[in-house]
Picture (spheres, rainbow, N blue to C red):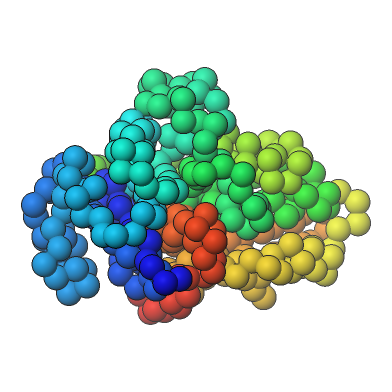
Length: 353
């Protein structure tokens, strides 16, 4: 493209915001115009993210009312929200009004849960708070690029990191008809999944050399996972989800088990997954089982399949902050602006993290 697309990151001081800034620093066509933060307005980006100090030397966080003044001549705006659940919708509504006043062409990708549900009632039932901008819900879709070749809405609500890891493993299985529609899922997430603000569950002495389940069978992502699997595969499925907190900082490792239906075999399942993800540049079906170190800090998801007697096991590994959040958001933004889907996202995992 002859002219770059302006990027504005709302809620830019959290872990997902920091990952968005890192990825945008290397994007060939989307250029950061503003990192927006009410709490850090006027502070250098490097003060919150020392690892980004050189990439954004001389660049400060700006306030929510100030970002339109940072835009250059381009009238194209990639608006990313990394604001918290329950706050993001109202922030986005205000930003869209600002964009309209500036006569900008805009696409939004929201990393919060605010636009993951088609209806206001479903969101409010799960999160027990009022939706901040229900009038915008028809303008958003919630799915993964791997499940939707084209998107009919202007904006996207990115699925959660657990939902991303589990759905990428589950949807081909459900669509194949080779397994019964009841999934038993155990998934372990790193401490960054709990956000930047310290709390007992992420405090290092409690998390180090430790692993524990939390909210077994009651985690609020389970309905989101089931809804996305139904939308993508056409099959209703019951998701019995047990999340775990792991002792590592980044990544999600998910293990799905299901009973087979009919004459499923490892060869048939592997072929189905290979075909399903043949055009998905960031999903790799591996021999054996995936390993977190092979995907951490990358936008890739690795999937492994095992089948014995009447049981199938599908494992998936991805980085919760990248493929599960910021990287997936950039991948969607590439799609929305009709850029190559892989733009700015092809860096390999560093390995020995």
